[in-house]
Length: 299
Ligand SMILES: [Zn+2]
Image 1 (cartoon, rainbow, N blue to C red):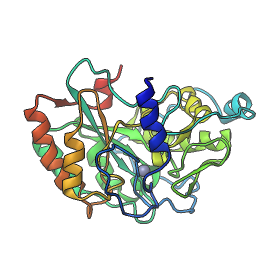
Image 2: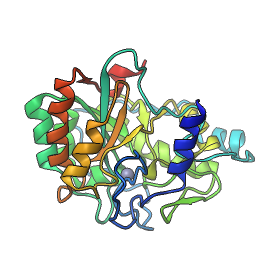
Image 3: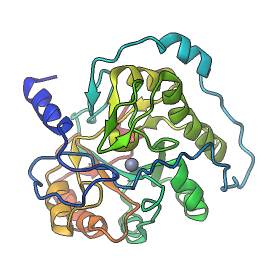
C-alpha cells in the first residue's frame, strides 16, 4: 500500500460522517470518504431471526468451513492492531487492468434502514448495469418478495452484509456510535448467521462480505477469510450512507476510475442515490468504462 493510500484510509477512519446512525450531513464530496452505510443500526439484536423468505426450491445448506468453537479457539486471545476500513486481506479495488468499475449497493436493514429503492434498481435493469448487492439479514426479512426477484436476476450478485449489521470487532469497538461485535465468537455469528441464510436461499454461499459501517479490525478480517468469504470495502463512497444529494452522488460516482469499487445504498429511496447514479452511469459508459459484478472483477 502506498503512503498516500494509507493517508486516505487514515483520514477515512477518522470518520467524516456517520455510518448507519449518523447525522445526515456531509458536504465534502471531493474525498471519497466515510462509507456511512446508512440504516439505523439499532441496538436491537436480531437474534437469529427466523427466515421469512422461503426459497422457491429447497437448497442444500453449506456449512461454514469451520465451527464457532474453532474460531473461538483460534482467535479468542488474539489482540487486534487495526481498526477502520483497512486491514490485511480487505479488498478496496478491482485489478485496474481493465476499465471495469464495480457498483455495490448496501441494504442495511433494521428500523429506518429497510426501505427499497425501486427507482435505482429499475434504472440498473433498464440499462443492464450489473451490480453487487450487499444484503443484511434484517433487510432480507423485511423484503422477502423483493429479495426473491433480485436473487433470480443474473444482473445482480448477492453478497453478505452481516446478520445484525455490526462493525466487525473482536473487542467491542464501535463505529459511528454503533457498537461492534465484542468477541471472536460474535464476529463468527455476524458473518455466519447471514451466510447460512443466504446459502439456504440462494443454494450457494456468498463470496463477499462487508460489515455494517464497513469497519473491521485485523483479527475480524482474518475470521471473514477463514469462513470462506472475502471482505470487500470500497474506494469511492458514492452516497455517504444515502445522505448525498443527487448532484453529490453524480459528482462522486462520476469520479470513479478503472478498478474502483463504489459503495452506495439501495435501502433509502428518499435519498439522492437513484438520481445520482442515473446521471453518473451514462457518463462513465461514455468515458469507456464498463460495469462488473464483484465475482466478474475479482478472481
Ligand atoms: Zn450497511
